[in-house]
Image (tube, rainbow, N blue to C red):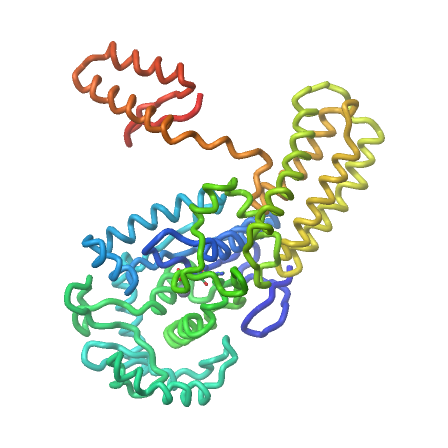
Length: 478
Ligand code: AMP
Ligand code: ZN
């Protein structure tokens, strides 16, 4: 497989550090609100990378963090009058719901910055001990000029950066960072401000800088050298450049062998972002479309190309997905008939000679720097082919073999399910279910088991089965 490496600006053959295993770290969202569909792009794209590597037989350790302490989270907590950890916990839970809807698998580990503070303090101390960092009035800074190779990822020249920063001397004064030895230096640890969450450290009460979190969590959960580090292209500078400086200065080892960056999701030519206010949340879109449509839309472009979001384009994706689902439905119909016919010679020939061509086309596209756009085209071709080569006379076994291949490529690798999402349940119906469950719980508490059983039967009549679990009552469609 070839991967475009931001570090070398070339497509390179992917060779993992350890044969058969891949360690990936992806920068995750800052959790202070619902995620927007721009944030969903790296989630979907790199989940697909993980799935494809697994399809090729690799064992993948996939780590993606939640940034759960940050100025935006603190501002939100002040606005809402609740602790910062309540804000982050709430939006982590909401983000996980969105991921599930988009069929983004949970990471092997989802570390949270606030749970890893001792490791961060240790890294800062190592950097101070090695002369790569210094403390001034409770703030610890990374000494950028102490690290050779600063700028290698973003291909920036350190002297150009310096002159740019000097022009910003006024901004430095305003931010209170004019005490730095050098305007390039960045914060590893910052002292607390009144009312902010804080942790004890050798440099006083404070909190870690954002860049430090990823260096620490990737080291702990993946290792000193990552096979692949990924994120959106806005993170190349300064975030990823600073991660490299911190990690390589600490570990004296290369930080990541391959750097993958997704292009922006745009709207009317601008990057979709919270600050510009030009965003749709994943929730907004999933209220109008099957969440799979959004996933399919994201994969209809290669991950490095900018992708414009518009109603027409998402409608096109909905139609495209429909063609695939219809094709799969046709195969399912033949499979369900279970006609016990043996696979005919002609069918056998198709399975042996024709079908592999579509798989090969798909794999070639994915091997070429995860070109999901061409991989989706291969699936469309496969659907056209299965439609043309099956009819009411086809054997169920033949249809099953075609379906299995389609499922491997679409469901397993691209994460696009071949079944339609169930119709969303009406809110009033869900409220009624929950009301009945609450009534049943109360009845059981009062030892009115007859009423409790009655309610269970009533729910069953509504097509709902319930189950008593340790976490409470769960329900699902019968
Ligand atoms: P944030 O919560 O801003 O740190 O972003 C979380 C992830 O979403 C990062 O990998 C960002 O690079 C990515 N991201 C944010 N906005 C966009 C966008 N409009 N298009 C693509 N990726 C984005
Ligand atoms: Zn990061």
